Image (cartoon, rainbow, N blue to C red; front, side):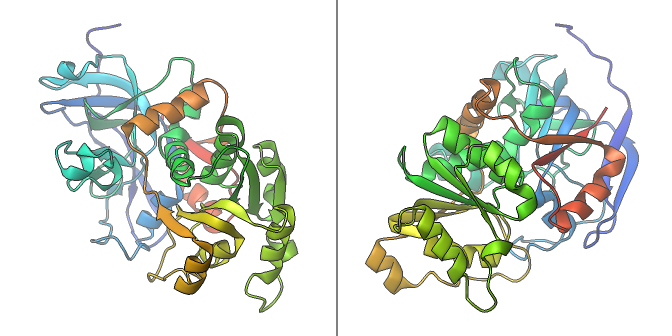
Length: 368
């Protein structure tokens, strides 16, 4: 592998020029120099996540600060190391290595959360694409000891979604407590996270998967390993508070319900419906993050939870080990992301599709 790579003085980047609206400006910006312990990555691909949309629209009220104009979004970046900062080689990386950048792009490694393997809640974390330059650009800096190595047998376009959608749903399935042979439901099963969750659960972990989504996503969900698909519209009745949907889930699961439900869609209504899908001892795993005002899960009644011994847990993102394990599932062919490539100039259109609930699987930006 070459010991030096020519790095341009400037490169292209997608910026949120008017946070709060779907507005993207593609501009040339200065290419940064890696500092001590850092690497400069020449990115070739970046997945587009609903979290990016939430940050661009400034619609997550749980975030501490409003999104600043000029923010470069993105957190599923894959590329090759183009330059090493002082001491970066001590992390075992070299120029030419293919690596990935995740949602949590940097951790301190020394706080209690880090020491216990909870990278996603590191007290001193940096989030790619939120007050840290993200991966919707051709070059980005990353800590040499926290970039994620990409398996040689996995293409970059397939690797990118695994750095967020893949690792997050893998971690969610692990935390669900479900056992092989039990039913697991994915709400939002045809989206970027949902269709990967179905594949990981069915083909990698031995679960019996049920996918819930709109009718247009039936084929994708079933081809991703789900035994059953539940059409939201076909099981929705006015003012029934989800009773028809719950009845269908109970019918499919022999009257008991599922051992776990992963809510991968950013919908408060989906969370309210999910509690009724659970069998005794079941677990609701919160994955999707609704936008707007913070709203509690409407049907999480203590009396019901105690009577059925139900649990609620959550996943923001997996840790570094889980990221590597998720990538290995993809490298082995257990998971194959449904991807569509778009150029940087098409990012605004992708977000508009996302807002309308029309996207199936994942869109990955070709940054070349």
